[in-house]
Structures are given as C-alpha cells and as structure tokens.
Length: 179
Image (cartoon, rainbow, N blue to C red; front, side):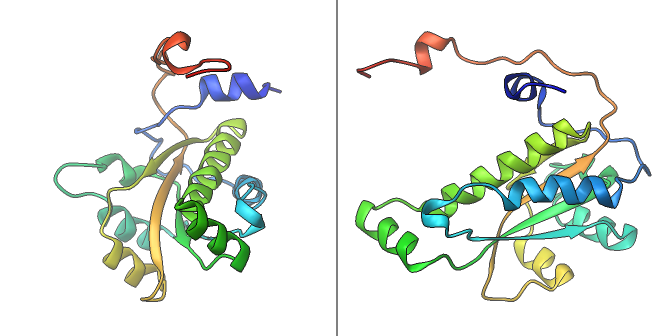
C-alpha cells in the first residue's frame, strides 16, 4: 500500500488508455466514495457525480470533450465522471459571500483531487478535463438545464509509463511564517 505522499508523487494526468479495458464496478464505487467523502466548506457537498461507462454513450460524451484537436485520448477512456455543481447549504453560501470566495468551486476541485488520488490507489489512470462542450454533454447525460457541468474526469488503465514530475523548487512555493 502506498503512502499518501507516494500517491501524490505517482498520480499524473494520464492521456493514453488501454482501449476496451473496463473498470470493475467495485473499483469505480471505491473511487467515487473517495469523492463523496471529500471535505467541503461548511459540509455543503456541492457536487453530483455522473458516471458514464456504457460504451456508446461513453463514445458520444468523449466526442463532446474533443474539439480543436484537444482530448482525443478520451475516446479510449473506460469511464468518465461528470462533476456537476449542486446547490450548497446556506452556511457555505453565506461564507462565500462574506469572504468573497467561491467555496463551492474550491470544493469541486478538492473532490476531483480525491477522485484522482483514489483512482491512482486503484491502479487506474485519470485526467481532469475542463475543455468540453457542456451543453452537449448535459444533453447526452440528462443533466438538467439549470445545472453547471464543471469538470469531467477520464478514467482508464494507462499504457504509458510514469513521467518524472516537474515542479517548482520548494523554496519558490513554500515559506514559513512570512510570504
């Protein structure tokens, strides 16, 4: 079992999956449970996860993520997780307004991180997508018009080796006591 830091080190945005290889329902449920358990401001839990695995629907949704040459790899995904922004509780809304911070959007990012780290723990590759045809995917997945589809996470078994992680030096991004 990997430690959290080992998971953070090995998790990457995977953009090449084994075509036709499915992810077991039990594995998907564990991955999504991590997202469900993610923390959120005032426990608002402003998310809904729609999982797409049915091959023909998966293909149509994948097409709706691919334009201008982007995200072509999504066609080989075993599953897609659509993250929809949902109403949060009054405490989170109030805090967002008072502090001028969009807590629900931050919460979706945290949930997406939990999902991708859980996927890594299960040996499943992932990539968080922000580039997609929201209207088309909402139509395909039956997401109500008034909802916002904020992120799509592709999942699949990667076919490429892990890349060396390139990050800024610690001294450039971490300080103690003062900026």
